[in-house]
Image (cartoon, rainbow, N blue to C red; front, top):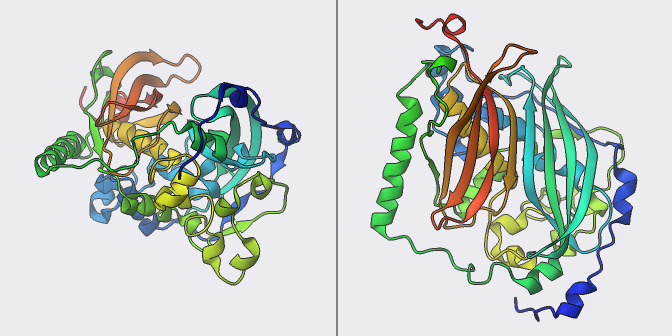
Length: 405
């Protein structure tokens, strides 16, 4: 798709009217509840989509020997228990001709884990926004919205504060920030074998530990975590990521009454859902076949919104980080808080590498939690930065774990 470049004068005069967004800040939004309880298959399908071979999530015999006695949803599975990938509250207010990308996630986990039989609901609200100039699309909105995940007992499971990057697709096309990235990299067989060996080394770093806990006292500041390898990514892997979310199944969620401007947010016609047609043909409203997610797996629509080729989901990047930390921390570790900023998406043909190091150890004076802060970075095989941030994880001592001192 060829577009004329922007002149400096045109850049100065780009219209981006965000005034309608103001009226949505702090307004409780319509939400959706899961119609059906979480199943073991839901959890296993999610682990498969996240490329996470931790048997705790799909091997019933292995999980029976764990602290839960059954498969348990990883922390990353939380986002799959609501609709909209957690981005819905950050896409409120009409801004004409815009699309959105994920800009980051902050998570707080409160205690309850997601086990088979759980049924979650969500509460949502736009938190704040700002408009700033970017090389990608000129005037760009960074809006944050909160989603609270609550189980059937009324217990708060987690809060997700998601950042949406809202931008004019026509400007992104003309600025063409990803020029030269239209073609998937060509992997030689030797390179593929190297990536496979790196994956096996990473998997062994947590599979070889089995149910053995990682103790707070055993962790040293400055320690590097094993490097996680995911990919090469493909249209198939991105489709699997999307379809692994229970909320993406037709009829899986029930909307509660309330207000939302999600579908009046200014989407391009090609990226919008046809809700009337979806009453007859659900494909017209499921987001992937027809709607805002089609750019992830249909390259012509990726180019329409300023992307060079098929690309992955921001919420999945957050899920990869959560899985990475949970696999390292072991069954008795508990992720309490994350703050991850996304810089570039995963593109088809690329490999993602996640690295972490222990930055701080402390005992929280209010709770007594033994906390370890892990600084995380995510990059491609070319060294392009995809994400960075930190995760705070609670680790046990020998008395709590049953392990010898």
